[in-house]
Image (tube, rainbow, N blue to C red; front, side, top):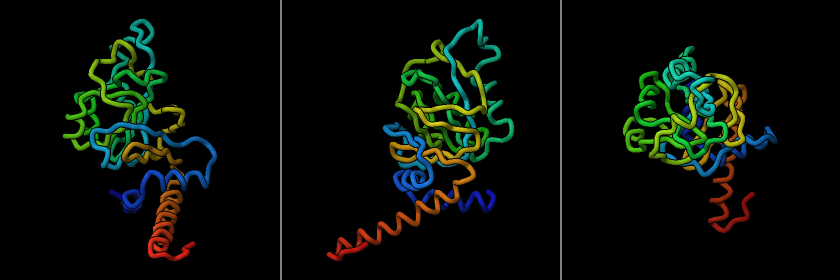
Length: 214
């Protein structure tokens, strides 16, 4: 891992979703966060630049499965490399459909991705947890979703739960929330988040001791 990437990861590990959201809010007015997410391992930090997949309603005539399938579209998404990246999957209006499970997500492990963020459901939470991936989605599914949606596009801007994600934007997720950070501002946002967190912790300690604080 490059030194710059190590620095970013260390900063990310030191802050929480609320800290990052507040820091983003000081820079931007646009909607940049997701809430009420589910994860097989919610204590696991998901952090890295995004590669994207967009799912469309399944139609064998318009999107023949020999071309439009998870393997082909995923391989397009990681054509420039997958190590340390986050797969962001946009359901385009199908939040209760499964976009994949343990078998498909094993491809992420093979390409070195750190995890996945989806605005729909995923299957096989137990397998996903065991494989060490950081996984955040709308909940666990048990039914296959390939008859409803199919992968259609890779590495184009997507919208997940009302939040714009461009390839290369940074994903920060933990617990039940996620924040999308523009790539050019990720260091500024994380540095601000840590500084504010430390300042607020100092004020809280002062108040705990009965002082007036800040």
